[in-house]
Amino acid sequence: MRALLLPFKAAYRGLVYFANSPRTLMLSYALMIVVAAALYSIFEKVNVGDSLWWAVVTASTVGYGDISPDTWQARAIAVVLISTMVLLVIPLITAHFASRLIVDNDAFRHEEQEELKSNLRVVRQLLEELTAREATSAGSASPLAERSD
Image (cartoon, rainbow, N blue to C red; front, side):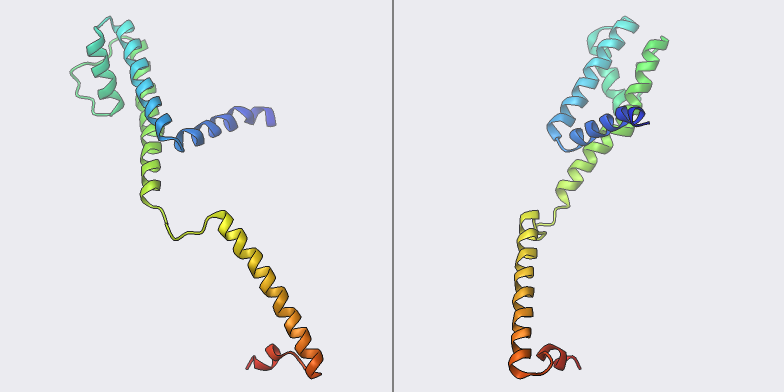
């Protein structure tokens, strides 16, 4: 069963890698445009300029209709290009830039959180020692217990 999940885990790791790297996102976008344009040019036997125009218009889902695929191979490329752009690349680019805009500068870093937790443990231990010392010296309950009204 685990072997069946390995490709999905690898795809997920790849998505996380792409989502966290704007350079990789932009490079993958450009690479998809170039590959789709090259394949379109081969299958439809059109010049590179027209095929590049078709790839950009198709990837952006504008679809002017001035150039459209006639062969099934080029139509398959269009389906993959549109689906990948709409379902994967554009949302990843949008999410990346949105996460950069929504940054809480007041949030603690992990190291700061760990330091605060460590300091809190020390304070708690000192407070317990102080409470125990007060209880033994006064011979009564702890001052904290008396103050809880």
